[in-house]
Length: 366
Image (cartoon, rainbow, N blue to C red; front, top):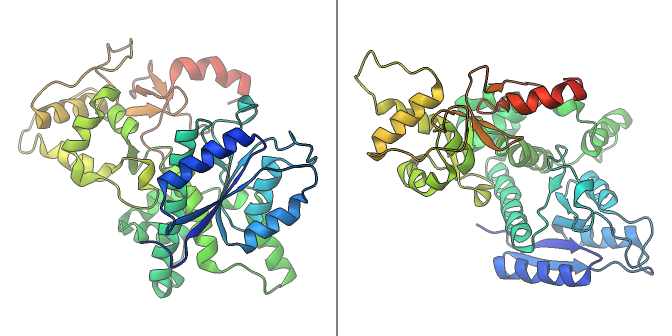
C-alpha cells in the first residue's frame, strides 16, 4: 500500500557526483507513484535553515544527508545539524560520510539512522527505511481507536505486529526511552511544561519512536526477531546456509515494517519447528542451546549444516550472535559473556565474544 501522494525523500550531499549517483539509484528503486526524490547540493549562497524548512513544507518523509556539507563554502552546515533539526520535526533522518567514515559510530543513537556509504547499499537502506516508517504509520492510522486505548508503546508495537503476547519482550528494548536525552524527548518535555497546544499527533510520535526502536534496536540486536545472520548463529552454522534456512523456515518470516531490510524471522516460530524435530523423543540431551538447534535443523533438512569459523568449537556450537564481532558464540564461559551494558535488554540472542570483552571492557570501565 502506498500513500495517496508520493512520499518526498530528500538527499543532501556536497559531493555532486555522489549525490547524482545516489539520486539515480533511488529513482530506480522506487516508482514515481511511491516517492519523489529531491536532491540538494549545498553552496555558499544557500540559506541552510530556510532550505530545511522548504523540505519540511514539501512533505519530506525521509532525509538522507552527508555528515560534512561545507565543501562548497556553506559554513555551519553538517549532517548533525540536519539530523537535529529534522528530529525535532519527527522526520526520520539518516547520516553517512564517505570522506570521514570513522567519525560516525557504526551503531547510531536511538533516534539516528546510520546510512551505508556504498551507493547501492545506501539506496536499499533508504527504501527499506521509507517503507518501514510508512507501513508503521498506516498500521497505526488504520487502528487509531484501538491504539488510543493501549497503555504503552510496547503494547502498541506488539499488537500492530500481531504478537500481542510479546509485549513484555518489546518493553525491554524500550526501558531507557525516557532517558535518551534526544531532541524528541526534549520537545515532549517542553510541551508538557509550557502547556502549549503544539504537542505532536500521537500517531505521528508513535510512528517515529516505534520505527526507530524497531529498526535500530529490535531488528539490529536479535531477540524475538532474528536477521538472516542471527538465524545462522542461532542454528550454529555458517552464513552460506542462509538460502537453505530461508526455505526451511519460510513460514516463520517476519513481514512487518522494515522487512525490506531483511529477511528476518520470528524466533518463536523457529523454535516451534526445532522442538518438533525431536517431538516424542525423550532422553536426548545437549550441552548447549546451539548444539540442540543445530541438531534439530539438520534433522529437518536431512543433512549436516556447514560449520562456522569459530576455532573454540571447530564451528559446531553457537546459539547466539556477538553484535560486535558479528560472529556466532555459545553460552559457555570460555566463549562469551552476557555483558548487559553492551546489549539492549530484550536482545536474548546476543552475547559478547569473551576475547573481545576481556580486551576492551577494562578500558571502557564495563
